[in-house]
Length: 245
Image (cartoon, rainbow, N blue to C red):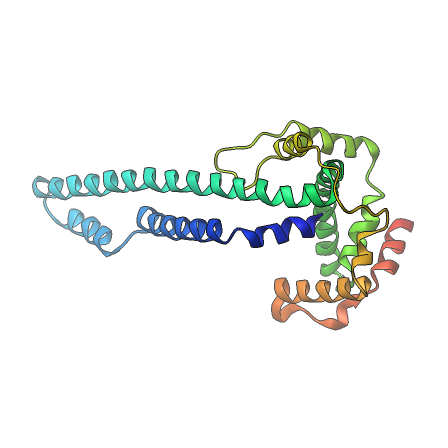
């Protein structure tokens, strides 16, 4: 289902070009609004050096610059609102590919799983940070996340689900809130064309090996030269040891 959603974005060439253009313009607005330049420095310097009977003129100039930046800020926020709206529509459109491939019920279950996995990811990253200080880096983060899912208490899972059901989409959000996405999926009421009770890992010829490679790449990306392969340890053995202690 997730793959169907992501592949759905490949059909959005026109929308992607539009959002790229809006983001590029917004980037220019942000630079002009927030970055100080040589003219700002000159106004500050000359305002401090001149007599106050003349310096007030440059004070007015600074107010003019501030007012112009305020106008540009309004345009920037308007562009951000437009871009966010388009991005949300792109997500809804990609959701349709997923919904009609795996069905509306599976779509809802997937979003609940994603909320749980998002929480578990934070827990795993905190654990990895603690282990890294001791010179140990687990070699399979996806496996650790999967094991950790089964250890989340039922009441916490319910809280995560309730949070998703009460979520609301903000005007600046690039993705719709889960509640809105699930509501659209239910409205579509698609049965889906693909159903399988097995694990999604079966889509890969060697998922365990791929997970280890991704973990390796992740460490190299975030640690850079501080990453030492010799610090890699078995995630299975580490989790077993932590559960015993």
